[in-house]
Length: 274
Length: 274
Image 1 (tube, rainbow over the protein chains, first blue to last red):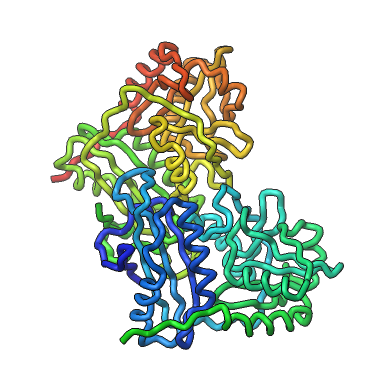
Image 2: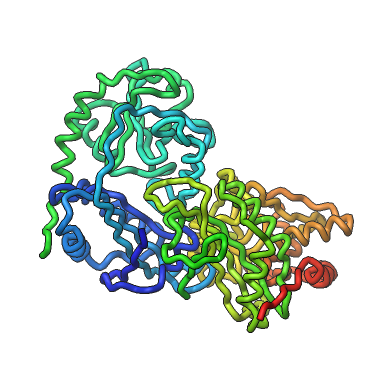
C-alpha cells in the first residue's frame, strides 16, 4: 500500500524522508482492537528511547498522536498499526539532523494465530552495534534470516556470532530446559526488546520465577523441554516443534493465561473522534 | 528532492518499494562528467554482487540501463548519479521475494574537493554480519558516525569491535606508517569495498608495492606518517591532518597522479540519446 508522510504536526508532505535511503528510522507495530491500543505505553516508551538513541528530536505530543490515531481508526474494529519515524534532512549523503517524518499505516485485519508453532534455529547472526534493543529500520539481518527460513518452519531463531540463540525473526523467545531453568534472553545488546517480552518479564518477576536473561547457549538449546514465542500482535504462543522435535506445551499454559489477562491492563482506550 | 520509482523495465510506479521499510536495498553513487560515467564497470559489478547477496533477481540489461541514463543526462555536463535498487514485495513484514524497484537520482553539480583533508578516528564500530563489502542501505552505523564526527574533521575513520581502523564514513583509506608499511584495509568483511579502492589496489599491484589488506591496528595507526582517503566522487585525496597532527603528503603524490590518469581508462562513454 502507498505510504503517506506527515510532519510531526501531522501535515501531509509530498517528499519521502531522506533517511529512507539508509534505514535511518524506527518503527512500532501494534494491535488495535475494540477501541483499545494494546501495550501502547510500552510501544511509546520504546519509540522515545529509539529516537533519543538516533538523535531525533522528541515528538511534540503523545496526546496529539493519540487524537490523530482516534480519527484514523473511527470506522475500524481491529487493525494492525505500523508507526514509522524516519529522519529527514533533505540532503544527499549521511546527514544527521534531528528533523523527522511520520507515517501511520493501518492494516484493517488481524492475522489468525498459527495452529502449530514450529521453530527452527538459523545460522543467521545478529550484530550488536550499539543499537541493540531499539526497533530501528536496519533490518537486513531479519530479511536474510527470512530467506533462510523460507518454508522450513513458522519462525526461526537468530544467534549471536558466538552461536547463542537470542530471538526470532519477528518474535522474542522464552525457553525451559530439562533442568527446569527458564531463559528469556535480554535484547538490550542484540535484537529487539519486544513489548510483549517486557510484559512476560514483569509477569515472571511477580511469580518469583528466576529467569536467565542471557542468550541461550547451544548446550541449553539442545536440552529444550518447552518454549514460547511472543510479539505484540500474537501475544505468547507455545512452541510445538523445535528443529523437528516436539516440545511440551503444558508447562506454559498458566503463564499464557495470566499474560492474556494482563494484556488488557497494559492497553489504553482510544478516544474515537467523529 | 522527490524520489521516483521505476520497474526493472523503467516504467514509473506510484508505490514506493516495500523494502524501504527495512533498508532492504543497495545503492551506487557515481560521477558523470563530459559524457563519461566514471568507474562504471566497477559500480555495475558491485551492484550485481550485492543483488545476488540479497537474493534479488538480476537486472534485465546493462545496455538498457545505460541507454536510459543516456536519455536522462543528455542536457547535463556534470552530475552525481545515485542509483538505488530496493526490494519490493508489496507485503507487510520481512518478506523476501526477488522483485525490486529502481530509482535514478541525478544531482547536477559536483562538490569542490576540500582544500585540507582532516581526519579523526571515531569510536563508532562496524558490524560484520555477512554483508561486508556490498553497498547496502543498512547504514545506521554511518549515520551515528556522522553524528560523532559533527564538525570535528572532514572525515572520520570507523573501527572494528577490536578497535582496528577499517574505513571512513564515506571513503576508503590508505595509510603509510613510519616503518614504510602500506595499509589498504580490505572491506570484504567490514565496511564497503569502494570502487576507487579497487582501482588503487590494482594500481599498487602494478607497482609491486606490498600492501597490508587487514584493518589497521592501533599501534600502526599511532605511527601514521602519510594517509589518503578515496571514493568514487573525489578520487584519492591526501590526508593533511590526522587526529590533530599534520601528515606528510609528498609520499602519495606520484600515486595520485597515476590514479588520476587511470580513472579515465576505467570509465565508459555514454551514448546521449536525443
